[in-house]
Image (cartoon, rainbow, N blue to C red; front, side):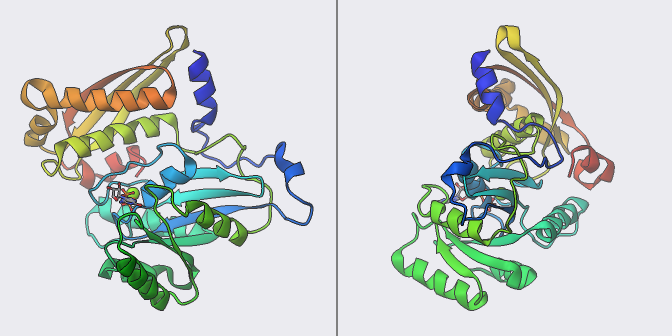
Length: 325
Ligand code: GDP
Ligand code: MG
């Protein structure tokens, strides 16, 4: 129970509205000459460049589903980095990409909307893979609003490839500052934080200092389950999986969290794939997700998954709305 309490303070609190709070405690560490800054920072970039990984590293907890498959991120995800001198409210976006299904266009609309709210835009590109047509499209979309280009995956890039990507990025966005980072190892990420902080408008913190996200715990749980489904089904089940949390009940006396979730797929064949032979795959998915959830929530987790076929859910606007997409 104590562990649960301790962790709960660092967890998303479920509030959807920014709270304006007085800064606490840290003020004496900042000289009067350094104004406090706060604002919204949107990470943009084509799928798979490492936006979610960067967000998770910055916030120090797992908020966004990360996977080697593109388009894992569907929602607008906010992580909050609080430092004595600044509070950075991060917005992770689904990649801005072409697509004609309602799900696709909703994802793009969400990405565009979070761009509109941003004080600072950071374009993330893959330093190991070099720039692709998708990067140019996103750069055109954000234009001069991109103050920084984070050239990610430096851990994997050769010196030559990295220099070439940096040069190309600075030709693409001549006004932006180019910052090589590795979201995976954290290399140079603090420098990026420092530069972004200074670019924010002056003002008090927007959220309490111990809050890391405005996402609800339920959403976090659904993202973790969805990530495991994507990981463990590989290419067999496409992006037609959604996870809806049906019940999320804390039992503090037993240090237990009981989560019931529905896994929505579009076709009976996909249901078979997710469940696996003799239910082995859904058990593996559940177990891997449960271990992660226990680590995050700091208590025992009982996770029950039901796989349901909902035909064409990704084309059904009502279902999309229920999923908050
Ligand atoms: P997003 O689609 O832009 O949000 O990309 P993700 O954060 O989901 O990352 C896509 C893939 O790139 C995942 O397999 C990550 O582990 C990997 N990745 C992200 N950042 C780095 C990095 O700095 N170095 C390396 N080697 N891999 C990374
Ligand atoms: Mg992502």
